[in-house]
Amino acid sequence: MTNAGGEAYLSPASLLNEQIKIRESKSMSSIMQSKNMGARLDKLFRGTTMFFAFLVFILLFGIVLTLFVGSLPALKAFGPSFFTSTAWNPVEIQFGGLVPIYGTFITALIAMVIGIPVSFGIAIFITELSPVWLKRPIGIAIELLAGIPSIIYGMWGLFVFAPLFADHVQPWINDNLGALPLIGQVFQGPPMGIGMLTAGFILAIMTIPFTSSVMRDVFEIVPTMLKESAYGLGSTTWEVVWNVVLPYTKTGVVGGIMLGLGRALGETMAVTFVIGNAHELSASLMMPGNTISSALANEFTEAVGDIYTSSLITLGLTLFVITFVVLALAKILLIRLSMREGKQS
Amino acid sequence: MTQLNNKRYLRRKIVNNLTLSISLLTVLFALTFLVWILWTLFSQGLSHVGLDVFTKMTPPPGSSGGLLNAIVGSLYMVLIATFIGTPVGVLAGTYLAEYGKSGWLAPTTRFINDILLSAPSIVIGLFVYEVAVNTVGHFSGWAGALALSLIVIPVVVRTTENMMQLVPSTLREAAAALGAPYWKVIVNIVYRSAKTGIMTGLLLAVARISGETAPLLFTALNNQFWSADMSKPISSLAVVIFQFAMSPYEDWQHLAWAGALLITLFVLGLNILARTIFRPSQSQS
Image 1 (cartoon, each protein chain N blue to C red):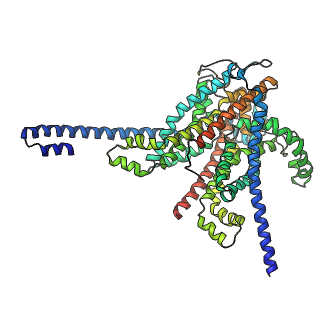
Image 2 (image 1 turned 30 degrees about the vertical axis):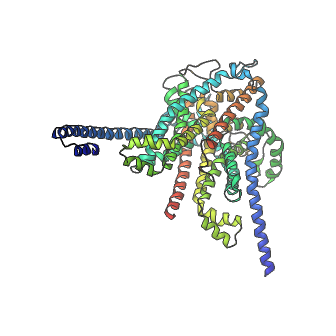
Image 3 (image 1 turned 180 degrees about the vertical axis):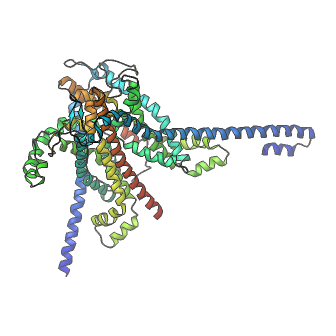
């Protein structure tokens, strides 16, 4: 446009002027056209990206709906008692989900009892203690733990860890913790190596990288001024962590724990190797058990008949709903922390 | 008085030293398992990794063989899953980063995506079984690739969004001021600046699905023979490792360890590549 205008100014001849006017109007229209094109392409691009975002959005409902439809036969046959029954009999077509649901929660609980303090310690080490040059290598090494495929944890757990655990750790637990009043029963059992305790322990190692990396991230957002004020008053490093860093990041820490919990609840292959796959409810952690995910991995392809398959799908739906709630809580807590941080800064 | 203060000071000092030593121990605890697992893989697997592993099919129990069909099957499914998952993930991530400032769809999708990111992979397998196996009537490599792609998508969405948000808005404004329509700004400016970051996310996604077993169990199933036909059950390294490791046959177990070593080296290699080469000193801390 400016070009055309400039030419018009430079050429005095009216004929030329005329020509230029024509050219100008032409270029005007082509610009308008390309503007229209641009706007249309803009809309198209926006629409395309929106479509795929919507696809991700709808995926969740697709999963829930599909699993719900799949679980209808079992729910119709057994009703709500499916969730309280310990029956698991493919021959008589009697199924109940209590054993795997219980196992899922117990193994995840063991994982949390071991995993939370360790993750906390790692996060403290990386954010408060480690020299700067060591932070990155240690961070990467811990994250590599999350990179190791779950099936490898399973093989290692079954062939290497479980025998050692049976020979050296379980007898000790039997003798010492098993002798305790009231809770002793929980720690008594045959030292087989496999079972819920082993599964929980391996889950703990697997969730450590997730929990500790969230903890580390939230510890790092604590304003340096706050920490320095506490140090200035004469606090030790531990007192700063316990009285300043932890209260400040409380919601984020809980969010990280929930994230680890969500992982532990849904973990499949590692547990399948070491849980023992027994449909029996027992108070002892040494006994083999089952989790929802390992029941699915072990039995789904071999399940015969609608009710059997549908019962397993019901378990899958239950697992999905449980992890959804846990992960959603984790997310909400983390969002709340970052919102508070946003307000303050 | 001073004595009391000294005592208290001493106690605080001891508590401090104790807790900080424990914190050091927790790091060593975690690293021990990393080293232990890697050492196990090398000591058990290395002696069974030979040329046979890459040139022969999975054997029946009691005879020698390799893992060729499993490796090829894994490769196919991972490739296809990446090809399906990447465009979907990148475009959805683009929406969240560029158009996600208003409306309900973006925040909800972001929330759901973060949950899908950690959702149990076995449930994804169950979903794909219902959608792509039960309806067709047989297991297939396509179903396996689809299940894996559903795991790729959330990872790619997340990294794409994060990386695009790191691109300074002054760059976008500069391009817009020159008259570029928004889609051109995104494609030519934002994508280009965020390329390395998005690639990193992609590598991590590939690393993640390469070792996945659970979603393949009831989608791709397994196949003892050579098959490159994606519409039939197809073998994959992870599922073969599972089957062979759980078997009582020694040959199979040896092959399982060899496969375990290969898969772990591949996955960890991708992880290290993504974290070191593709992410230059941007997050030093």
